[in-house]
Image (cartoon, rainbow, N blue to C red):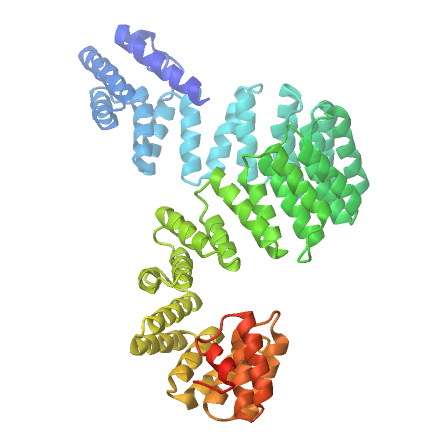
Length: 582
């Protein structure tokens, strides 16, 4: 309709440039409305024609402002120029002036009531103004005059729907269907109306008619299956899905639909078989396959461990789509949850080689580096991540941790101080930054700055057991504020009671307070909880035993500590002399 209308106007404009009398849009024919005003003189009509032609030329060039002024001048030259009114109605509408647009079209229709395009434009204006009754009335009259015009019939049905006259709209749709036959647009519109009328059986019947009329179109069978599912008719839905398999054996989409269908029915083996077929399908978009995999994992596996069967499917997806990073990332996350950290890291790296723009993958990679205590990777990958995402705080934190583990405390401190400036709305992360700042400052011998950072971390998050533990331990090493240190150490243990490092710190602070019996109880707990031999714990155990006059046992534990490693520089002197040195 729009193209036809524009073509008519362009043709009319060309006619005006050649001979005004040949334009059907501008002709004042017998039978036009009686709303025309005083007849223009021959000179005015010539002036009008010239102005109209120039206005059309400007409009075609996109000069709407100039075109509007020329059309207005043309209308001044001939007050009965309904073609200029038609053009001005459109231009006023573009300017957001519905009242002026309506006024122009109303006058144009009065002057040329037989002009279909004028009637259509007037109806459009009515609809824009929210005058649904008037909009519908225009098309009722047009349908009466042009009963075979499918577009007018469609517009009339729209008007009836807007009026809430659903039964009448259905009648109009049926009338249109007789002319153009059963098609998807009509069937879907009729289905929607029947649902609005709370007539689900008739709504389903429309889709059934559509599917019967197009027996080799799998989409309509899929629509029919979905309709049956909504009605709870699962047997018929399955029949429709199976028809798709017969019509189009290579259709991958039906397998995806059946995955959802069988999962909802609890038929997990059937669902897996359909998912397997979907993953292997060559014509199915990888994104749709991936969504089906996710749906399977969240529905079947839930929050439990992912089965080897599912991992096999994910590997199959990766094999078929090696350049799609989503499958690789999914498997990497699963391996991370299964504590297969090295395998997880390899996959995150592989994903980044395909697409380095996903920050979340970089974050996961850095977490695997941290879990593996790979200080070199923490620094290298932290730098690479920051080249791409310089305003993300976590890469600064992990890089700083790696530098600290390498004993490059100055550079670590710079990384921590820079990174914390990018933390927004995350108190837990900010607390961690100040914890590591405190640790780095302590290693650099800046005790005052270290204490300040730890205090800051605890103000932000008083429940940070790592900060409580570290702060208490450093105070105990310096022999300062031991009463405060023992309170923090005890709180750290209460927050994380299975952490041997926290319990060791608590034992050590008690030792520094000369509360040796209590210290012994705690250090023995720490040793039981430690998963492997720990030199620091053994040395502390020996020191506590020595203070309790159990020198032989102390010496035995010092020797075990030396063998395990990570002891104080005094360990050999203790072993050689059998005496405690502090």
